[in-house]
Image 1 (cartoon, rainbow, N blue to C red):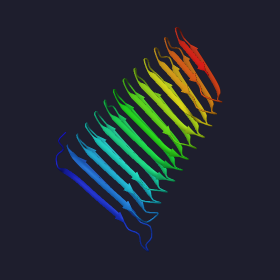
Image 2: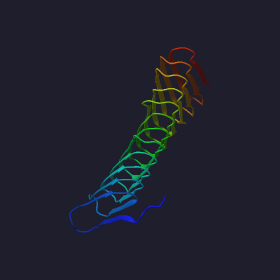
Image 3: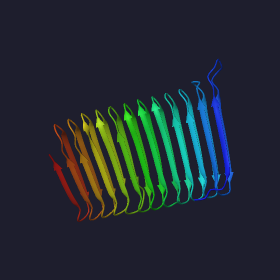
Image 4: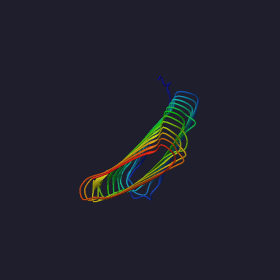
Length: 312
């Protein structure tokens, strides 16, 4: 795409010194087409707050926000109304409180959020509404951090990709898709983590939900809720000396496929699947590995539903 040279660029630098902690605030508003906004906020004094906001109305805009520091509070807000928008947010450093919010409305938009460091509290919210072929990419990486992500798409052919990596973290992912041909993929990897992933289809057909949780000494919860037909749910939980739980609910929907795989060494594995009022649904549960305690419960109400459970 050709982006016209309407560019706003802001750099804010907070220096260390014998002064009280301060704050950096930046706000950009653009109306029209083909504009871009770049904000860089860098602090070297603990306790400094970074606050950025970008609002873009029109088509083919680009927003980039980078916030770096240690012991700081970082907040970014991007709102884009129109097609062919791109948003990039990076919040980097240790001992930070990071909060990112992106809202996009319309078609063919892209949103990217990266939050990483040690001992951080990270929160990211991405909301794409009333649009098609939108992509959301969210990555939270670090050690001894608390990571929370919320993502929602309403429309067709949208993609949400969530990655939460590192050790000693508390990871929470909550993702909702609506309408048809959408795909959710969640990765939660690392050791000594507590992982919770919620994936939901509010409406629609032919959606794919994939949850992957791996590591040692972990507590994994994967919760999926399906409303609609011809959807695919894949849950994969594995590792050593952990507790894995996968709970799937399908209500009043037909021709769905649920695959739950739980393996590893020395794990407590629980798979709970419930189908109510649907037809021609298939549930496959594989619980294998070494020295695991496996429990699978499947309840179906409806006709021509198929259940296959393998424990080994």
